Amino acid sequence: MTKKANSSLFSKDFIHLTLSVFLISTAFYFLMPTLPVYLQEVLKASKQEVGLIIGTYTLAALMVRPISGYALDTYGRKWILLIGMIFFSLMFFFYPVAASIIPLLILRFLHGLNWGASTTAGFTIVVDLVSPEKRGRAIGYFGLSFTVAMSIGPVIGLKVLGHGHFTALFLAAGAVSLLGVLMASLVKYPIFKRPKNPVFSWKALIAKRSLPVSLNILIVAASYGGVLTFITIYAREINLNSYTGWYFTIMAIGTALTRVFSGKLFDRFGPTMISVLSIISISAGLLLLSHAPVLNFFLTSGFLIGVGFGVLFPTLQTMANNVVSPERRGSANSTFLTGLDLGIGLGSVLTGVLSQPMGLSWTFNASAILALAGLLFFLVVSLPHYQKFNREE
Image 1 (cartoon, rainbow, N blue to C red):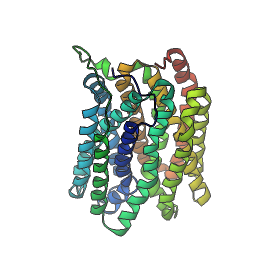
Image 2: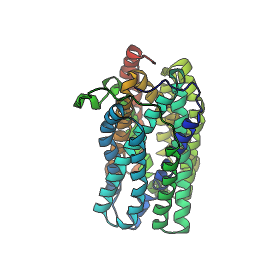
Image 3: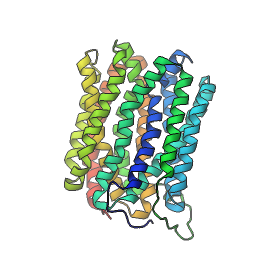
Image 4: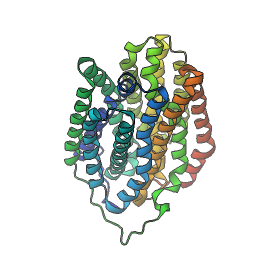
């Protein structure tokens, strides 16, 4: 349990925390369009190996999130966030010496562990900092840190790579991430009261009431994971390589525009309509991407996918927090983010596997159908469950 949440949404602590996550996320997105190129051009990795290495990162985050959630609810928030961020930042400096597939797999696994711990802690602290009636907006605005990072991170990463070397890219990412640690150190964290005589149990690692929406984000994120991993390679295949940075920027613009008001819509009207429309937007964007030799389709796809996730992510995460008691928020966020990571990881691996016989274009068609399966799951499972257990304390 923590002290009463601040009635002000944009407090100094909220701003510092958001800036800290923005900076480490920007460093993370430096590698999103560039690491697959590094793997193929320098390490001569196959598409399956690219998918595996990217998926290893999210697998590690997936494994550590439940443990992080338990630790957050048992031992507090501050040091889990700071230690996770520090080690996350230091990992960037080891990329130049991980010059083959196996060492890079190990490094990506360790990097993912610290990413999982840091981001789980960050989202939990955000919920602690604000009052319940502003929770949707807080998660939405906090999520903008990832969105803006998604916009500028890939562009800066590509620029650094264009004017230097992969080593310069990795060192720049580490330096930016360390600035995020500095921002996090300025936050005055809510006072945490440790539970008396905590007893570890496997059940404590998972927030059962948050499982339906966590499975929901898993399904939809699986349709999205292949885009994040293979968009640079796909753009090269269809002769639109020079527009890869624009794709990420337009996707991030779509996400940012919707995150500004999606939290307010959730707080006022609930999750039903905005969730339905957001998943339809994601599916439509994936269908356009499969026809993306046309430049307008390629860029519009990024916008539609960005709009969809800009609404869906904070909506489902707020639902995950609203069905649990305050002392279970760490587990609720870890359960939800585990679903997200597992979905992106599975999407990366499956896209790499399916693209060999099918091609990336047809694989994105299959991803659009998977997103619609997520819509059906929302209407049949997630929404009725939320309506039954919603507590908004």
